[in-house]
Every structure is written in structure tokens, then in C-alpha cells.
Image 1 (cartoon, helix red, strand yellow):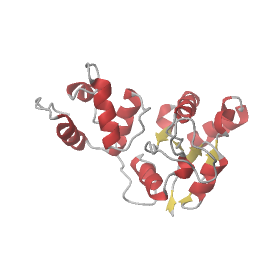
Image 2 (cartoon, rainbow, N blue to C red):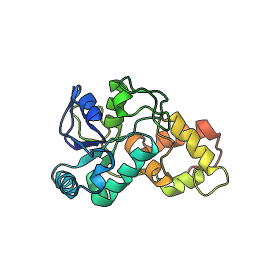
Image 3 (cartoon, helix red, strand yellow):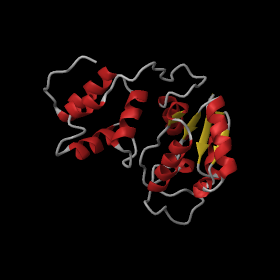
Length: 206
């Protein structure tokens, strides 16, 4: 059981049930796309974000990212943390068939993977293993230097990096940058990129 300060925002009741088994904290559901028209739920989420911050934990499919991006338009960016589950093919036990994209949702992912995702997000957890960074030190320039943006093979390289880090494939370049700054130091980022892409460019000062 880990204690999380931020209110955790998930899509549905089964996600909430899953997290309640090992998370000590406030868990709020969006009822899928229902939050788009639910002004009271939006107001609640804004209030929670202002008072304690929110941690968004949606599925890694397209629908999950639509909800995540909608919430980014409802709540100031500085009040949001993001936790991402990796792309894992499969079907939840309660369902008769896989989702449209064939990926497991939050309810189907193991507790260990979810806990790792929450801790890596930079959320305020009872565990001391959560990464607490005071500033972002991986920049858009770093992404460019290592071929992750602006180049012919940038999308393919981002895909390789996301797969290596167990991040969802739907993640945009900007969201990837935000996430990298939550889970890696710049030195770790450089080391991984050098390993993956065999880069020989001169490393710049942070």
C-alpha cells in the first residue's frame, strides 16, 4: 500500500477498484468521456488540482489520451502530474473480447507496473523512491541532438525510446519530454540515447 497526496484521476469504476486495493489516496473517475459534459465533475477536478494536485492515470489507448488531453485543458499544467502505463496487449478478465486497440487498460495492468508508473511520475508518495526533481533539465534541444525531433527518422527513434522505457506509443513529442523529465536525469537520458542510437555527437552542457 502506498500513500499518494495527489488525487488520482482514472477513467472508470473498475480502474478505481483496482487502485483501491493498493493505493491509499483519493481516486476520482471521469466516467470515460462523461467528464466532457459533466461541469460538476470538471469543477471538482479543478478544485482538487488547486488544493492537492492531480495525477492522471488513463489507459494507453487513443481514448485514454483524448481524456488526458481534455483534462490538460481544464487544469493548469503546474497542477498536473502524469502516470503512464505501457502498451501491453491483452484482455481484461471481465471482458469477452479485447478493446478496439487490443491493449490492456489500467484495470488489467499489474499492481507492480502501476505503482512504478505512479512513483516515476513524480507524485508525492509515502515511498522515498519517488523522484523529486526541482527543475527540468532535458530540453527540446536534447531531443534534437539525439535525433528524437526534427529529423527524418525522429518518429522511429522516439518509438524505440518509448518502447525501451515502457511508455505508451501514442505519446506526443512534447508529452514525452515532460515524462522524461519526471523519470530520468539528463545523464541517464544521454546514456540511454547513446546506447540506443550509437550517438557520437559532442554532448552539450545542461
